[in-house]
Structure formats: structure tokens, C-alpha cells
Amino acid sequence: MTSDNLRTRGLAEPSLAIAGGQPVRTRPWPTYDKGDAFISPDDEVAAYSAIRSHRYFRYDDRPSEQTCAGRLENRLCETFGARHALACASGTTAITLALLALDLPPGSPVACPGFTFPATPSAILLAGHRPLLVECDADLHPDLHHLRQVLDDGARAAVVVHMRGYASDMPAIMDLARSRGVRVVEDAVPALGARLRGRYLGTFADFGAFSTQSDKSLNTGEGGFLLTDDEEAYARAVVYSGAYEGRMQRHFPGGAPAVDDLAYPIYGFRMDEIRAALAGALLDRLPQRLAAHRRNHDYVISGLAGQDGIALRRPVADGAHLGDALMFRLPGATPAECAWFARAVAAEGIDARALGDPGCVNVRAFWHWRFLVGADPVRARAALPRTARYIGEAIDIPLSANLTLADCDDLVTAVTKVAAAFRRR
Ligand SMILES: Cc1ncc(COP(=O)(O)O)c(C=O)c1O
Image (cartoon, rainbow, N blue to C red):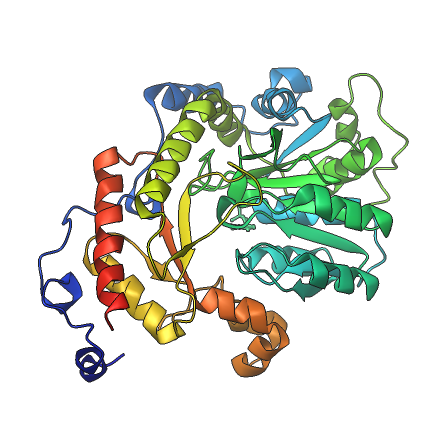
């Protein structure tokens, strides 16, 4: 919006930092890309010890349980209650491996939400399949009616995403998928450690895929893992990830299933020992990190509840979110107005972004995915009109696990201040 527009619409209130007023805070809002990390000296010790061992490759002459990657996988199985875990190179490769392991015919249509990070449809493409985008509802969860339609139109599998840490309705989605014989992969990348009705996200579907990139609950810079109870599909995923010359057998101390490891290509999607050591140490402190996210999120939500014009994103069940992001919509506001709102909150010292900002590409807005939807964003938006609208109205604010309650107070004050001016526009 131009400053003239602002003035005529009453958004240039001098108290707002965006209009030259005093900001709520001047200290930077802590985010991972500014160096904010939930790492303790114990985690550093674990990583140094792997470095000092000079054994960086998981498949050397040690048995699996003596490697950092093997130990990490065992601990992930215990933590999440899964039969099998595979440490790998990233969240994208974890989703890809899961899809490859499902052994679908090449070029299969695979459903995926229209509200996600572009790595999700990218992984479907990498696995040789065809993403079919599904509408989301007003809370930015997959729209089950549209999902049903896409499955009935022939999708062979679905990748379900717990976007920005909020659970999708897995029991309902699994019922839908099972009734149609469709396999499901959970992209639990944004929700590592979050639960839905007591059960960890990433354990509802045939596979759960996770990332350990720096913005995730376990931060090894890059990395990921997958979980499954399906022994044969797991063996295929292990081979695809780069376990050659019988190395796949090491993942099955009690005997491997009859999977021919020369029948599949190997893609080198493995995790190295240094990352695995770091991930193992971080896993010890995951409960503290999850509790911090929960505390911050609940505190902020209670501070913003009931404000006119702000539709806080509702979880599908009580507590079914990670808590590392605050999301709300400004119902009825245009994308330009939402962009102004986010910039006004950012000027107050809180890193807010409007996901549909017309002046600044946010890759979570599907109409920018030219690799998938083509060059015409108007046409792309018309194909998923509700998702386009809800993303256009969405404001997103990262909530670090290291936030203090004073930081959270700043956030509530800043959003409340901007929202009050916004209502008077
Ligand atoms: C929903 C979602 N899926 C997949 C990924 C990809 O994870 P990675 O960067 O580890 O490949 C991301 C990354 O943030 C994501 O947000």
C-alpha cells in the first residue's frame, strides 16, 4: 500500500513504528537464521566425540548398534514407538525415500496439500510421481472433502503435511485413505515431537518423514529421518538411501526380509556419523524444547484470544501442534492489507510475515511454484481458490524455543497495537 492509501485509510497512526512511532522492542526477534539455537555444551561434546573418532561413515566395519546412526535409529524407535527408523540426509530425502519404498508405478498421481513448503511436491517429483494439490480449510488444514475428491479421481498415495507444526486430522485422513487402498506418508517435518491425542505425529501413516534442519526440533544443520512399521518397505527405503553390498541386512539384527538389494537404485541419501551424534544428544533434551514451545505458544495465544478481526489458527484437537509458530488470519483483508499488517508488526520488532504478500515472494504460497503450477499465478490461484484466499489472509510469526515470557509479551503488545490501528482503518 502507498503512504497515501495509508493516510486515507487511517493506518498511518503516529504511534505505530511503521509510521515513525516508538517500536515495542528494538532487540532482534530470535530466529534460527539469526543464530538462535537450542544447543547445549553436552550436544557439542557428542559432536566433538564423533569428530575425534574419525569414523564419519555409518556403514564401516562396526555393527549398526555401535554407530551413532544406528544408535540414533534405535532411540528414535523407542521415543516414537515405531518399529523402524532410518536416519537420512534431509526431510526432502526422507519423504522421497518413503514414496520410493511404497513401490508405486512410475508417474503415479500423489495428493499433497496446497498449503505446504515446496519441498513436499518436490519430493513427490523426485520420487518420479505427479503431485495433485488439495485445498485447505479456513484453519489451513487439508480440506477433507477435497482430499476425498482427489483420492476418488485416482490418487495412488497421499503426502499429508503438519504445516507450521499444526497436526492434520490423521485419524480421519487415514480412514479415508484406507477405505480406498491409498498409502499415506506423513510429512511431519514441521512437527517433530508434536502429538495428536497423545500419539506422535509421523506415526499414524505408512511412513512418517522428519527433518533435522536447523529450524526443526532437532537441529543438526541438515538431516532427517523416517519412521515406519512396514518391514519390507523399510528395507527398500534403506537400500534406496544407499545401503549397498549387504549393508541393508545390518538394519535387521533378527534377519532381513526378502528384499533384493540389487533390484533398486541407490541414491546416497544417508546421514553421516557427526550429524547422528548431534541428533542423539539433542534427542535427550527434546522434552525441554517441546515444553518451551508449548509454554510460549499457549502464553501468546491466551494474550491474543478474543481480539476482533484476528482468527487464530485452530488446532484439529486440543494441543495438537508443536508451538514453534504463531499463525492467524485477518479474515476479509486483502493480501495487500495483510502485507501491511505484517510489515507494521515487523516494524514493532517482531518478525511477522504475510504468507501471501504480493510484494515479497513467500514460497509457502503455492502460486509461486512455477515448477509445478506454471508461469501464470492467477490461473494457479483459480485452481485452488480457497487455499489461495486463506494463505492470502495468513500472518505467520516464528516462536523460538528460547523466547522468554517478556519476548512473548512484546509479541502480544505489538500485534494488539497493530490490530487496533488496523480495525480503525
Ligand atoms: C513441510 C516441509 N516439508 C519438507 C521440508 C524439507 O525439509 P529439508 O529442508 O530437511 O529437506 C520442509 C523444510 O522446511 C518443510 O517445511
